[in-house]
Amino acid sequence: MRKYGLLLALFSLVSMGQQNKDTYAFEASLLRGNVLPHTEDLYHLRGHPEGFMLSFLKQTHGEKEWHSAYNFPDYGVYVAYQNYQNQFLGQIVSAGLQYNFYFLNRNIELKLSQGMAYATTPYDKVTNSKNKAFGSTLMANTNIGLFYKKEHIIDRFGLQAGFLFTHCSNGRTKSPNSGINTFLVNVGVNYDLGEKNNRVLDTADLKKNYAEPIHYTFVVRAGVNESPIIGSGQHPFYHIGAYADKRFNRKSALQLGTELFLTTSFVDFIKYKSNAYPELHLDPNTDYKRIGVFTGYELFVNKISLEAQLGYYVYQPFKNDISIYDRVGFKYYWSKKVFSSFSVKTHLFLAEALEFGIGVRL
Image (cartoon, rainbow, N blue to C red; front, side, top):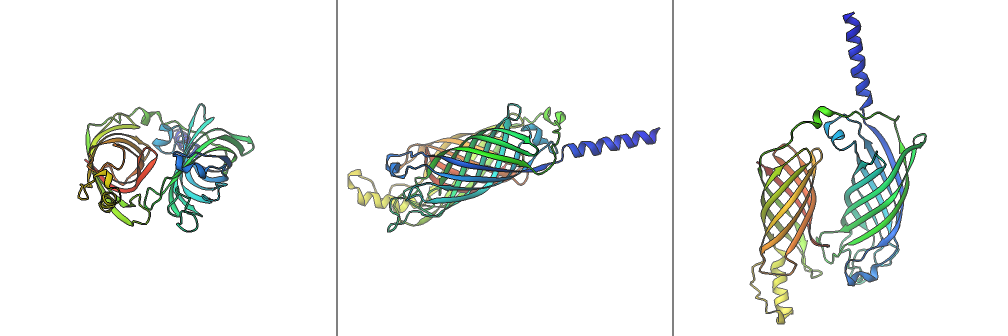
């Protein structure tokens, strides 16, 4: 009798392992929409872009704790193509990482993806001087989409339709860099590579208390950028920050901190403006350094977290930009204390820097 009980328990474990085993799927979509110029000097770049987006995804079923915590998302890679239907913007090809999150009985899909894009016709002072959006061939690409999705309509085939917002910018690693936004209608198909699987909710992990006491984080972000003067050259920057954060639950933490901005491209830019615009009465020796205070939010997924911050310059002798800045990006935790990060720092829609960072959370 004991022998049969042991076999039954073993069979149950094997069955549960098969139920929550991850599967794979494809998504393919056609895109068409509009360029959204965010400043008046970009109106000549308007058009009706069209293209496609392909995704290869791992479908989660509860094998890990974060799967059930986020209602069993998909994650994987994407490749996208856009023809802007504008002679100055040309075409882009982008690729990167993608997450799909689900709501309302898995009928509504939120798509978040981040990657790199290649532009076929960036700014050139001789052949393409009107492209103020792309100053380089390589750029960062961000996509946010909301779709109605239905899987397994016919066997393993399903359909999805909705809207996709895309943004491309080089973070002013090279000027000009106004960036470009598009709003696209998306219609496509999805295909499961494996059999339809049950999803197992891990209620034990969901009931765990993830609240933590206040932690203190130190982070250094760096990279290169160019002043708004085209051809002025790339210079390094260093953004040194410290903040306190409080994690309240499984997903969320709030931040409050300060940071020092050492943007060395400002040194030559200040001298240029003081000479080119004497009516500004700008001292060529004006301090280029800035100090900001910020509040932020961090969304923990697994080893990856998403981060958004809103800040204000309390020290800004050279007032080239508005006093409010923001940052969005993601972090990868190599351990509980050490992380690396990638983020985009902007002033509203105008990017200033693509930041690569490393930090420690104590």
